[in-house]
Image 1 (spheres, rainbow, N blue to C red):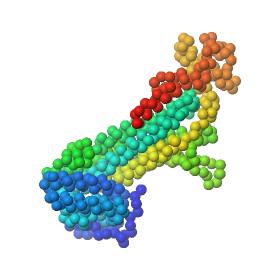
Image 2 (cartoon, rainbow, N blue to C red):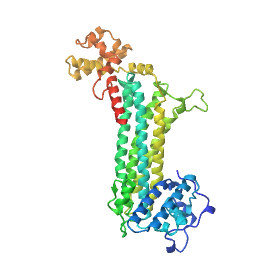
Image 3 (tube, rainbow, N blue to C red):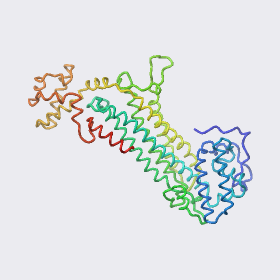
Length: 470
């Protein structure tokens, strides 16, 4: 996950804030072991944004002069341009994104760069940067979840009347609308978006001003910085502000749930595309072939998404384990929060983006779905409901239908193919009107209640989702 650092010959002499205390330099091996710059440099925008807000507040509070504030703004603008153009030199010896930017700022503007760190520590600085970065990523993920929902709603609307065998225990249970089935995933992803929005509230609190662990003696205006950066408020306890990563763990848990839902959908796409089912086909651009079997078309995208779910769940477990044994306050262990967090974000965003496109490449095969629904006596419950409406207690009706199904299995025919005299032999209340409920279409149409699978209800849900998603 992390980039490969340069060889030892390219290491720069470390200019560290604590160098005067130490009688020997850090070994090159330890520098490599403790450095994070080759993966945390993605935080550079958040670091610059947070530093500018901090410097603006220092100037407003009279802690740095107008010349220093102007110099810091000028220097940060140049650093931003250098990073964006690829000209910025990231130095392993400077350990992380924060010291790299601060060192370059000091090169550019002198003592003004050194004054930027007044009233803050890298402990509250990194906590602020991660929260700023993660807030933006959550917003992007919520947007991607919306795009995926809209793509599934489109497919659902086109297939509201298509009959799919609904399964329990992977056995044919009752007929459902294929559109209704897809809308189940829309509901899951809608809850995922709600969870992300809720996590964002706890991410969006400002640690800056907590300093190393105890706050600071400088007269900082933390609320001013929070307002400048768009935070909802400030972390109220300095020890907690710098040391806990529960917001990252909570995000990872929400991300893991999204991937679990993706994995469930992936499993169904894989099954439906197999020759044993043959319910759908996926566009060629989402599949691969075999190096030895020329007839193969493999659903690699859903298979890989199913596999990547384990990766994201693993990152969640890693972060929980990382945090569980740490005493207050900050510990170096927390450097290990970034790679799993970064990879979780990358994996989730890539997966959602490709699945929104994949949904549009689904070709539905209604005839195959309907043939499969006919194999499993999917209207047996409808026959039981028919008998209940004739006055039988449901448990008695259930037993009557079980005998009818057993007889149909013996004859190798569907319930709807049994003659009326045969059906009446199982119960005298069965009349000619029974065939209306024994058809797949009749079963589907009968479930016309809120949340049901009748095409009218599916279209109503499609309209609701479209209004919600905009």
